[in-house]
Length: 484
Image (cartoon, rainbow, N blue to C red; front, side, top):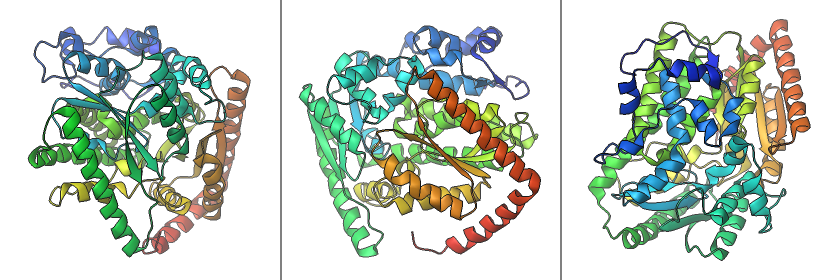
């Protein structure tokens, strides 16, 4: 970042970041802003140490470990300021669109319109963990969404509280082959008085004829959404603006893929798993500012690339892990690293936010072609093969599945994924993430992680890991031409 010298890579706590922050030149801090296209946006600074965001309510930051690079600090500041940014967008006269259920597939269309920002209420699922508070969960419970529902129920609490994001100009809900918990949540959001434009997502078929019909249907859904956006935003769809926006989004998606390859291919771990999860989820709504998101991503990629080039990385993190299902509690990623693991691959149920979008073809069909690659709109076998391919490509030694009690897809998918991974020679640990305040259960998860990583370490020492990697490589070649 601006050519400042980087210290040797390590992970530090929020107190250490507070001290290091004092050494950053003030002009650099003041120049790091979002919405840089707006004149006189003196309020848009976001480069602060984690201690500042902890004071504002994200108390979990007091327990986390962070990468010590300035580019990683910039990423954390950008991600943690998203809520503020959405309010600022409204104050600056921008329109606000709440998108639920599709996780990154429809935002390219929304951002092709001018003066608009989109966000995912779904992503508030980690807010109770960051706040170390059950306020949003308890509020959702008043409407019948309790412990038997996924953590996304926090979004309903936020809609009810009216304090976590401004009232949207448009609510978009994806239904059909998507999260049942979100569908239940959307019904309650409507009862709170919010109109929702529904986007139907059919179940994906891998039969070529059915797939073509599905793409055609999805293209029609995008066309209907476009009409709704035109009416809401009082602006006509511009194909040239769409192409420019998609080119940026393809650049962002490509940058995320590059970062993941760099981390997986490095001899030593060059970047923390929590930072990498923040990067992957940037592909959903770009944290409310696509242009600045691109700058943040490429800044972090430069840091990782430099570390890989010089063979730099964290000490003591040698066990290569594949992580399946994003942990709403990022402290779990820290636990794995503290115990000697490093996350080299992931399947965070957001595959629909990864494909490059065709900029030459008909816009709505191009979006549909990328959308059908979604993690959850088809069979469990499709998602299992996605995860297996990545685990083999990144040479993982074991897999961790952090499920959610009450999430409809977790009970049905966890067992088949475990069986498939173990059949391919990958030791696999599965557990459910616990809600804030359950300290005893959190300790049990830590103990299970510790035992699992000790078993992986013993397996590596015995030489079985090397044999398993050879077998996985051979299996990977045999799967390259197989039908999902």
